[in-house]
Image 1 (cartoon, rainbow, N blue to C red):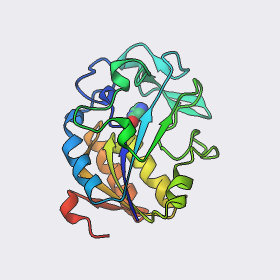
Image 2: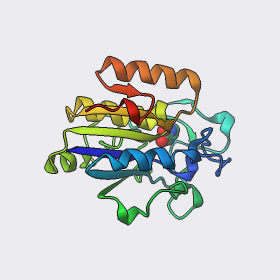
Image 3: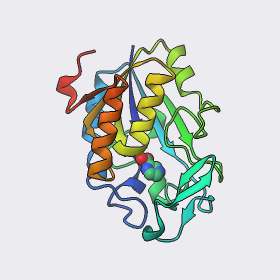
Length: 206
Ligand code: VGL
């Protein structure tokens, strides 16, 4: 069975929320996510859900990406994806969350800042249950899109490959990255682990 996974397609990662973590064109991926879901049996949504006062929060963009010596929060970020704010909402054009087959919220603990959707912690000890849910539903192939390619999409794809042993496909047409250089590196790294990186759904041949 195939599952389509929409990784963090939230307004916080789009120009609709310029004071959070706007990713160029992040708000435009809904049609590509909807198309990839049509070739899958299941559709899963993951969402960042962060407290506004988490330990990794800084108050301006130029203080961001500073390394933290904390076991479960590696970098500083501005506040983003706070439940109850616009940034937490999914981008326009996606189904209501009740239409998905499964939903994962991550990052709710104020001292944890996970990127991947499979574990609550950076050390990958505390499962969110995503891998277990996919296995329980006989999923062997996952088709991933979302935001951002170079952080949460990359880490989710790597976790699904390494810990779940799924056949993993990342559909770039349904993703956008924060920065060009880290996005290219992320694609290289994913390919090294045996993940299929495809430009569009036409290249999906499970
Ligand atoms: C993300 C940076 C910080 C992402 C989340 O969803 O890719 N990136 N937090």
